[in-house]
Structure formats: structure tokens, C-alpha cells
Image (cartoon, rainbow, N blue to C red; front, side):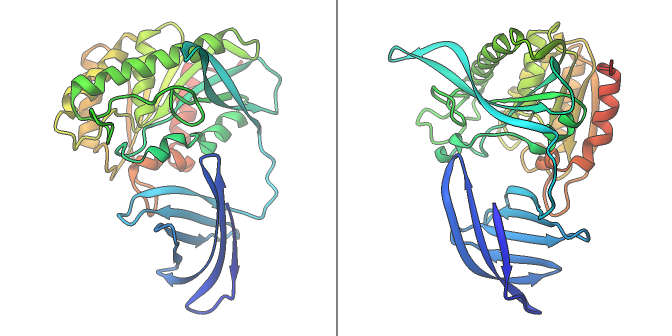
Length: 348
């Protein structure tokens, strides 16, 4: 994403805006923006709202919002030359499946640290869902977390972001619990819970690939994720209790707590992780429209009652956002994650 601020005035500015990703074509626009409570706000032709906030250091905080106040993207625009602590690449993960006689593979984004030689301790970080599941175009967006990747790469960790079947540029059908007509995610346990099994099968393929690679230190493996990827990480660790040193769950849940049967889905999946007897870390944000703190604490209690161990930490919502995106605000979770790493994977 690039942005130029033009023709600045006391009430606003003219903006030149350009953005592109692997999942969408190049979009460019010139538009007028206005100042609102210290922020520069512009309505784009796509229907989204662009909000800019100037930092004291000259960088600019950026966020994109849907009309119903749902945060789509957030980041920092900068002119500073910042040396990345990692090399980013994309790989194909083999799977045991085929379609029309052609072997299926999964896309995986990899952040390799540049400060130390491998083999590296490795975090497997799992992506979430796509809101309500009613925007098929979003299935093709490749998911990674630069904030999480940078934090771990600075500490000499490799981070991999596997894309499950049908997500990003992975092969296969995305099928983790839809209504019969695939119009949206299902709230029915009989449709939703088999999606957990399918996602676990995808992780089995990813882990089989990673564990035979010479650049992965298999004695220092972590698994984690955000939203649907957070609950998946807990459940998967329970299926492979000897594989990982720890689990980091950011705002985990399989279906939002507004689903009538959420209490028959989320705690069920979380209890699967109780077979993992090492400490886990659960990080949840206030004002999360999908998983309220009350609902998430109940899920944690179900996990503990089944024999799981861990720490549940409630964090404030990011400024101007909601608690479902705390993983994008490193300052909120850095201290807790640093303490957790020192406990479960002490440096050598």
C-alpha cells in the first residue's frame, strides 16, 4: 500500500492512494479527505473508509473500515528504511490428496530470521476464518501476521503461516463448516465441528513436511494462531501432545458467540486440547465482536476442567479498534509472550 498526501489544508487534504495484494488487483484512487478529531478520514470508491493518524515520529497509522465499523486492515505507513529481521518466502506443502489426478499442495508463507543460522526454533501460526464466511473472494487472501513474524524473527525464530485447503493459494475446497448452500459458516455443531477435523488433517500434512526439514529445530516447536487458528492450535496440540513446547492462542474460537449453538462447538473443540499437558497462553481482547471475554473465559474454564493448563490474559482493545485484532498491536501482548517463551522454551 502506498499513499501520498497532497494539497494539505486546515480542514483536510487530497490523497493519492494505491493498494494491491495477491488476492486482489491493483486499486488506485485520488480522493478528498477531511480531519475528524485529529484523524484524516476518506471514503473510498470501494465503499471502505480510510483513516490516517500522524504519529509524533512522522510515521502514519493507517486503518481500513467497512461501513458497519468492521476493521479490515491496519498498519503503519513509513518512509524510514527499516531492515527486516527476516527473509520472506512462499513455499508449497505436499499433501496426501489429489483432485482429478493432480496432487494437491498447500501454500505456506515463511519468515526466516537473518540474524542466526538454522536450524531454527519454529512457530507454526494458523490463520482465522473470513468473518461470516459469506465473501468467497476473501477465501483467496493469503494470511500472515507481520507483527507476530517480526517479533519472533527478532528472537531468532522461524515463523511459518500455512494456508489451509481452499485458503490463500492452497489447492482444494475450503470446507470448514458451511451451510448446505455454502452461503456462510454454519452455526450447527453437526456441520461446524467436522470442519475442525478437516483443519487438523491440513495441519497433519504441514507438520509432516516441517518435521523432515533440516532448517526446523523439532525440539523447539510452538504452535499458535488467531481466531479460528487459535482454537485450532489448542485442539491440534491435544492431538499431538509431545510435538510442541507450547501453544499461543490469540482470540481463539471456531464460531462467534452470537451463534445459538456456540456453547456446543467452541468448548468441545477446546477440550480436545486438554491432552496437551504443558502450559498454554490465551490472549483475548476486550470489545471483540466475535468472542466476548465472558464467553472466552467459559471456554478456558472448560479446557481447564478437562485437564488442560494455561494462563488467560484479557487485554484492552487497540485504540480505535476492537479486541479481535490485538495480534496486530504488539505492544499489547509483547510482555506476556516474552514471559511465556522464557518459561516454555528457554534460550540456549
